Length: 162
Ligand code: FES
Ligand code: FES
Image (cartoon, protein in one colour):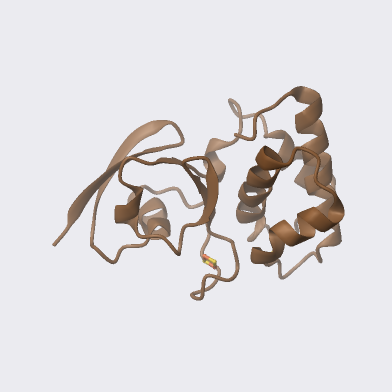
């Protein structure tokens, strides 16, 4: 049996018919066709699937679509402003915080939640926060530098985390 789920996705009202076992990430990618949120594991370890649900970062592979009823969901597709990269996205590009880019949407969505709570995180805080996000390519040094730079430019621009 399928159940209708209604929520907002990047500011737009959306709905989808889902099974009781459908994961939020699958609803976002397969039914709502936003494929910037990635699936990199089946053990809830990699963080490639991180989105924001009601303002907090969540691994969307660890949440049922049905639990998103009435929620406000933001994905990587929802963080730019009219086509201009979000300062955190720009910082990842500038500081070579990615190679293949597979982990990047999840890294950025996690980083935005961190900066929301701690606008000036130090290296240790960034590393601890990103413990649940795995990157197979770059090593983490550039990612940490990118998050620091993104946080700095968000402070300078007074930019909200999303
Ligand atoms: S796909 Fe969600 S943690 Fe890996
Ligand atoms: S940039 Fe390739 S997995 Fe992180």
